[in-house]
Length: 363
Image (tube, rainbow, N blue to C red; front, side):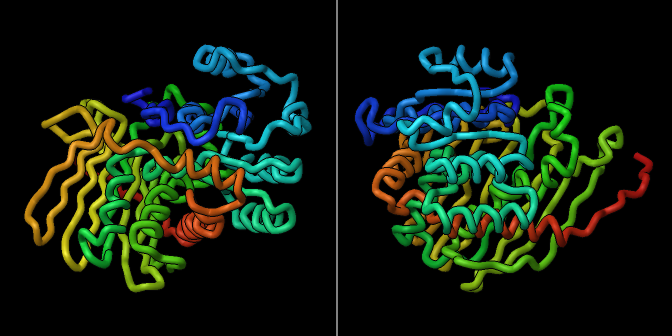
């Protein structure tokens, strides 16, 4: 698990198997983003069997095989798509390629599990919607900042239990470390990564819909900028947005590529949740200047102030639920409409974003 670089962040949790060995087979295709490791670990810990992998890049394959030494290396994508024993395709392709791979997977009779962001255009989203409708397959998304963070999972449980009453407002901070020298070329090409609100902003919008219980939301305002990376003119290194949900809950979030070098992890991700009866703060990856460990949650309600240190205590139920959803054709892990609505809203936020031109400042 890479603590310094979000692109290699791949949490490992406690095994909680919901199926027996060989009962649910999946394959990995497209290893363009390091999140594929977290996706595979989560599925394997829930009992899935990683049967095959394919990527045309031999270096990426070699690294993957080192992490998963028993996997079969397929000769082509088509070999995997034609393998009737494979039930799910897990993929972390270049963002602009994710939809087309998903369509090919679903048309081959597979469910599809992609890294965020799942789309870079609204046209891709509509194509995926139509393919889901036509094939009956799933197009699931790895919104890891909620699904693969124990403090974020526990926050959802507390909200469901009524610990803070009705959720009124979310404020989210999603800073990331750039590590530009380690990034592939596509990372700096807007057509391929989609824009900062489309990309890492998707985590924030998904959390809003989930925690606030919204089926729909409107983008009230959004903006993006390149403040400090003139050598990469298509990179947006800052973005923020304000939303209002169909139930009246609101959100403000900001995302950026400005994590200081001195921070012990790749980003000080935090979520603040205000309810009618209390508040929750999630400190996901670090408790700055106090503890380098993550997964801290602070709850304040009528019972007083509480701090929960949750590392290794909650687990990641999404992966087992996803496996069972694929087997039983249910929607307990995440509904298809929720996955698509979060993607749609991040695309709209990106589309509507005002471009901020920074003025030269004397420091």
